[in-house]
Structure formats: C-alpha cells, structure tokens
Amino acid sequence: MGREIHNTDLAPESLLLAKYNQDSSAKTITLLITTLVAVSGSFVFGSAIGYSSPVQLDLTNDLKLSVAEYSLFGSILTIGAMIGASMSGRIADLVGRRATMGFSEMFCILGWLTIYLSKVAFWLDVGRLLVGYGMGVLSFVVPVYIAEITPKDLRGGFTTVHQLMICLGVSVTYLLGSFVGWRVLALIGMVPCVVQMMGLFIIPESPRWLAKIGRWEEFEIALQRLRGKSADISNESSEIKDYTQRLSQLSGGSIFDLFQPQYAKFLLVGVGLMVLQQFGGVNGIAFYASSIFVSAGFSSEIGMIAMVVVQIPMTALGVILMDKSGRKPLLLISAIGTCIGCFLVGLSFLIKGVTPSSEGTSYLALVGVLVYTGSFSLGMGGIPWVIMSEIFPIDIKGSAGSLVTVVSWLGSWIVSFAFNFLMSWSPSGTFYVFATVCGLTVIFVQKLVPETKGRTLEEIQSLIGYVSL
Image (cartoon, rainbow, N blue to C red; front, side, top):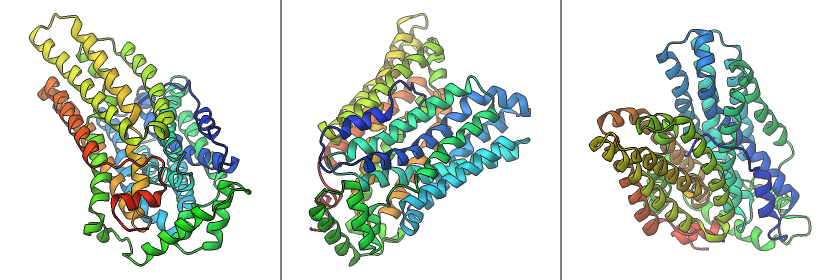
C-alpha cells in the first residue's frame, strides 16, 4: 500500500485544480469539493499510520511500556484495519458510500480519544484497534467513492490523490510528533476526522450506488450536481441505468457469488495486483528503511531525508500522468523500477558480505532504496487501488472490494512481521526475493491488467468480459 513518511511541499489541492482546469466541460466546484472531502479520509488513514513512529520514546517513557507492549500497540492497528476492511464493502453497499465514511470516522474519533485518555497499555491498544478499524473501512470506501463520482477523463488522477493524501497524512503527523507530546498528537489526529464528518453533510451520494438501489430520482439529482447544472448528463445517465438494470438480473453479489466463473478475471486482476504490491516488499522497506541503511553502513538520517525528497514528487507525478499516459504504462515502469531497486539493494548486501570494507556498497544500497521508493510511488503505490475501484461491477463491488482490501492488509502484516526474520536469514536473499516478485509483477501487468484510461466504469467491466452493454 505504500505507507511511507513523506514531505509536504506539494498540496493535493493544487494537483486537483490542475486536473480540474484541463477541460472545463462536465466539471464543477461540487466535484472538486466532494473529492477533497473524500480524501480527507485518506489523510486520516495516513495520520494513523504515522502516529506510532514519532511518539515511541515519549509514550514508552511516560507509561513505562515494555518493548513487547509497544510492539503490540503498533501492530494492532493492522489487525483493526483487517477487521474493518472485511466489513467495509457490505457496509458501503447497505448504507451508501457517504454514510460509510461517516461511520468509519466515528470509530477513528473514538479511538483517538481513547488513546488521549489512556493511562495503561490496555486502553492504548483499544484506541489503536478502533482507529485501525476505521482506517480499514476508509481504505476501501474512499477510492471507490471517488471512482464512482468522477468523469472518466479525470477518474485516474482524482483517485490517485487518495494515495497522495495518505503520504501527506503520514508526513504531517511525523513532523508534528517531533514538536508535541503523544497525547496532543492524538487530539490533533481527531481534526481531519471532524473535518470530513462536517463535509459529508454537503456532498452528494454516489450516483452509481443510488442507481444500484433503485433511487432513480436521487440518482439524477446527484449526477447533475456533480456534472454541473448546464451539463448534458443524458448519455452518462442512460449508460449507468442500462448497465445497472442488466446487473440486477444476475447474482446478488454475496461473498459466495464472487467465486463464480464470470468473476474469475475480476478477482485475478484485483487480488493479484494487491498480492504483488505487498509481497514486492514495500512495507518491509518502508517500516525498516532506517535499519536497512544502518545495516548497509549508510547514515539513516541522510537516507530517510533522501527518501522524503523522492517520494512526494514521484507520487504527484503519478497523479498528473495517470490520465495522460494511462494506468498500464505507469504500472509497467513502476514495477520495472522496483525490480531494479531491490536488485541493487540485494547486490549491495552481497558485495558487503564478500568485501566488508567496501565503501561503495552503502551508496549502492541508498541508490537501490531510492530507485525502489521513487518507482513504487509513481505507480504501484496508488494504481492498484485505482484499478480495484474501477473493475468490479456494482453488484459485487462491496464483497469483492472487501476481499481485495483484506488481502492487501494481510499481505502488509505478513511482510512487515517477517521482514526482520528474512534479513537475519540473508539480507541479499531477502531483496532478491522481492526483486523476483517485482519481476513477476511486470509479466502479470503486461498479460492480464486491462488499460482503463478514458473509459467509463461500465465500459471497463464490459471490456473485461462481464456483461455486454
């Protein structure tokens, strides 16, 4: 999922405005504001991830936590996220995308408040678990909602801002954590939650969800708001209606329905991208970058600063290029780059094992990590979430999206948990394994992933072969 520490030089609003001004047709202030409200949830996501790193020393000293207790506090976030992700799709289908975002924020606010008031490790863990649950729900519903409300020519860039806002959330939290205590930082974590909850009262529901449940009058009103009062929505409206009615004649979209033959390629693409994204080593590198630099004989401070300088600009570049070059070329370039990066890091450890006194190996490790980080930020960090939000038909989007999101969080936990054991086994071997997975990603993308640029969601699903329009 690409959850790293980032720089905050580039504002997501400027990137959205740049996309927004490219083509004045079918774009409104409502669409822009709606997207910004939605990605406030992405910022919450990033804040939760970034919280544990800067407060570690302060928190452990204040509450006299052991290493094991703090490790549980940090890792329980992922467990909560897996629980939230497993329920997110069903909740979003039952109550709508907008209400689901509000539901998740209530858990996040309660979690942050619990952390703030905690005096023992147990309540810290409860608060962290609640924040993780809300984060898991947000990780599904935000990109899905943005994909469902945006025109086809802007969908990729707008959806990728989800990843950029995660980066900014991590960065801001890490920065603030250097100046304020852990309790104050927990209170600050509630601010973007409240901002999104207030914004939810003024944004429209997803038109495609309204169509799915047969609220046709509200569907027309929401779509017209998002496209502008003077915009002609007749063609888009008819396409969505026809497609939704065709789907209503098929399966009900339960979790068991996912394993029918007609859904096989959807699941293969969606789950496959998430598995390859996580097992390509992103969270091992993101969570343990400092120790990687130290192991390679390089300054961890300089290495982390260099990562910060690379990540946000590359993520921003991916946002800008998403609807120009397309998803597939960016994914291929990104996967090739991550493969090269892992190979270089593995090579640096291999050379260091043979000639420990070689000074060049530390610089080779730095170059490898930066190549990996920049390449991942360009495409593999955000595009799998974009494609996940695009490819699933509306009747199975909830169940399929939940499955894909749980797979992503499970992969994240496995890699972050196993990374130190793998490094003890063989540092070079660890990165060669990651390089191999990244190489397989290139083949997977080339052979199986469809290009979704410039197509409506209904056209994409028809292209994969679900139902004819």
